[in-house]
Amino acid sequence: MIFFLVNPVARAKVAVMRTAIYPGTFDPLTNGHLDVVQRAAKLFDRVVVAVAKNDYKHPLFTLDERFALVKQAVRNLPGVEVDTFDSLLVEYVMSRKAQAIVRGLRAVSDFEFEFQLALMNRKLNESIETIFMMPKDTYTFLSSQIVKEIARLGGDVSGFVPPHVRTALAKKFSAAKKI
Image 1 (cartoon, rainbow, N blue to C red):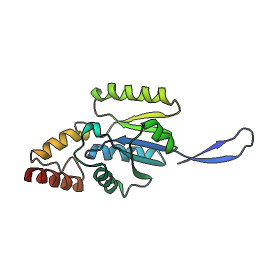
Image 2 (tube, rainbow, N blue to C red; image 1 turned 30 degrees about the vertical axis):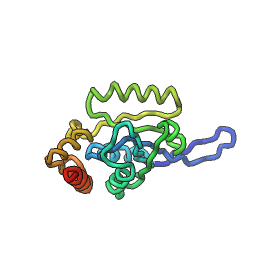
Image 3 (spheres, rainbow, N blue to C red; image 1 turned 90 degrees about the vertical axis):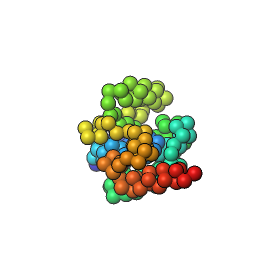
């Protein structure tokens, strides 16, 4: 979708591409994440899935591994691209000339934290909007942390993540057992 903004003085039309940033650690990417990406892609011309460095969370996968897993998962989605960032989110959003941040909400418990983040981002830059999106109800229980725990204990995660992510989890945990 292309919007035209009319300059009231010159009356010139300028096409504006609507861009949203979907940030996260994606450690690992789940089917719930993919559902939010697909929904956002219907609303925006371009969706950038921004994989955060975030060493504070001690991710299982490296930044490069997470980037590659997300990139493979969204490779056939038109208007969706993948990037990494390690800066303040609002600065990254501005650098990508985006208008919105997309955040997924699984349950009411997510809302309070996400609401605080959205308000802080608005305080830092009021021109950036935060859009909350809910995944399909079948994914509301999913979290990367739960998926990692199931995979670590040898459980079947095939219904929760794309096949290539399931394979990467199995390799990661089988390598850890050999140590």
